Length: 225
Image 1 (tube, one colour):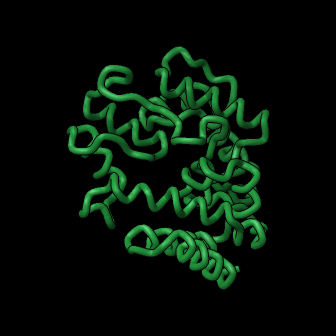
Image 2: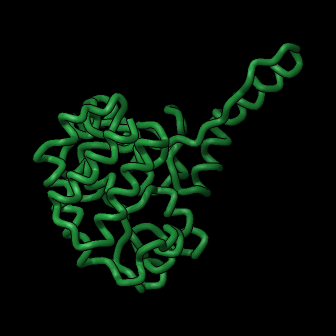
């Protein structure tokens, strides 16, 4: 659903309707109806057992040839690597339809609490430096399938999927089309995120019309704000 929102509405609509503070005027618009129309069209490509299926199970279906494609974050690539699959020969990575000019980001974060003694603070600094170091960023992201959380890391060991993602990230950042993931807690409160999740899920697993789906989303988000 998040990919469809960006693909249909673009970054400006995405930021207005799905990033705090949510603009209910943007959310309650014809663009939202168009989003649900496109989202609903995806039903024909999904098997009957899809509701509730974990993402990694769906990834395994693609790996095993039981499914043709999956719209998922680049961490799914780690599953392909574990299965011994190679980029370019066994699978390819491409932007979701309509999103080639944008990039949605999600970041794994570490929280450090203020310490009263210097030794603990120094230890935190060492850990932070290690996490953001080029060696750790390379090893971690090569195994996860994602891209480094910082610039300046050598691309030498990364594959073409990662190169494309890095290029898209930098380009989207420069053009203002870099958007935070509302599906992964980067854009709105947990209450609003839950309202979006529930509305999108209820719509997709029913025979609701696009207008009904949009109306349900607006009502749910309004109640959660």
